[in-house]
Length: 178
Image (tube, rainbow, N blue to C red):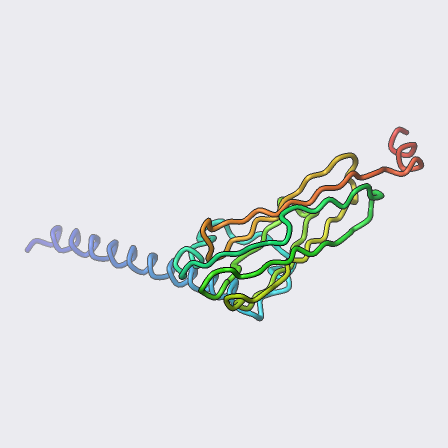
């Protein structure tokens, strides 16, 4: 073989090895991300409903045996609240399927809507709660926000809704018109 052919062959082999190493590193990162979300010792940001990375979201739930979930209510209306208040509500649910229910993520539609959800599996027939806090600071008028749960259910996502009418105090309105 000539030196040119040997060098070309080495370049191709190095490229293939580089791609394999990159793929293995990517898969390891995805596994680590999934493990962190599933872990009962999830970080405080995950417990407070921080947005998970979009890549790979729901992959663990897709692979699990399916179950079903039933909520007592899918929507909560806080009614009229004052701007700056942060009311909470609880969405109670039951695992109505035959497999353990694992909620992978609960994601608010914006930073003002913060869900907390059980990190441990819920046994068939077991009950659980999703606590949702709405921060009305800087909001006014009619508000409608959602929380999307990703779990080993069919369908994969369940959407809960909160609503409120946010009243702005008269002195705050005067201050904003200056």
